[in-house]
Image (cartoon, rainbow, N blue to C red; front, side):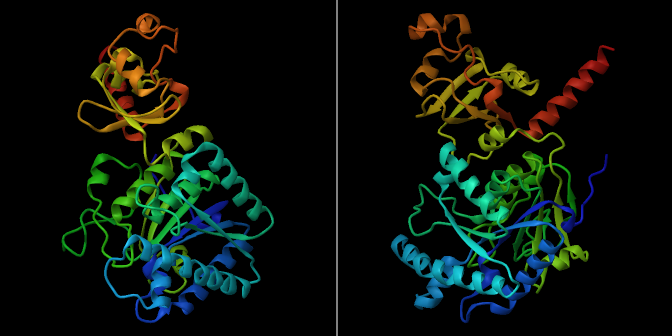
Length: 392
C-alpha cells in the first residue's frame, strides 16, 4: 500500500512545534503579527473539533532580546537568566494572542526527567490531558531556567515528539525555517532532492539529515528525524514544514510544500511508546548476529546473545541494544544491574543461579519490556519472507 497524506484537520489531536526563529527577531523581538496569524490557524482547527497542543521555542531568544544581551554564545547562567525573563514574556504573548480567539492558554514547563521518569511522565500527561478536557491550549516548553546540558533535551523537536506520544496525538507538525526533508542540505547542494512522503525512516533517510542552519534554532534536521522516529513508532504521523509564511497551518492544508512521515502501521503500546522514546539510555548491550535475528522475530534477549555490556545501569533502567555493526536495533528495560549483566553475558540462562547466587529472570531484556527498531523489524520481515519462499 502506498503511503499517503491525510488532511491536517482530519486528525483528532495535533502537536505543533514552533522554532525560535519563527517567533523572535533578534533586532525587533517578538513577531507579533506572525503569532496572531498562527493563533487564528489554531482557532480554525479547534472549530473543527481538533485538540491542539503547542511546543513553543523562543524563551531564551526572547529573553536575550528583552535583556539586550550581546550576540554570540551565552554562558549557562546567562541562558538560564534569559529563559527566566523570556518564559514570562512568551507565556504572556501566547495568552494574549489566543485570548483574542477566545481561547485560554495553559503553560507547561518540562525537563528531560519529566518524560524519562515513568511517574513524572504520567503526572505530566494527566495535567496536559486535563487542560485539553477543559478546552485550554497547552503551551509547552523546556524548563531552561533549571535544565543543564546533562539533563536537558537541547531541542524542542524531540520534546514535541515526546509530548505527542505522551498525549496520544495522531499528528506532529514541526514548523521551522525549512520546508521539509531534502536528500542533502539544500543551502549546500543545488542538486538536493525534496522528499514529499517518507513511508518509513530508514538508515538512508537518517543519513540525509543535515545540521542546524539558523542562529536562533538549536535543532537541525538531525533532531527532526529523531523526532520522527519517536512519533511514527507510536502511530503518530509527522509533517516538517516551513513556518516563514503567515498562517502556516492553513498553507499546509492548501498544499504548500512539506514532508509527510507516515505513522507506523503497527504502533507500539503506550508503555512501549515510553520505552522507545527514552532519549538517554543508561547503558548498552552489544549482541551477536543470532540474537539480532531472534529480536527481529519477537524473542526476548537472552544472556547468551550478549557480547558486551557498557554503562552503569540498574534493573529497570532503559538500555540500548546494538548489533555487531554498532547500530541500535532495539531498546528495553534491563532485567539486571550492569555488574550482574556483565557476569552472565554470553552464558546460558540455566547458569544464572550459579553465577549470581539467585534464580533471576531468564532474559536479559524481556520482549514485553522491549521495542525493536522499526527499520530492523521491517528488514527482518523481508529476510524471513525470502527464507520462507526459498523453502516453499
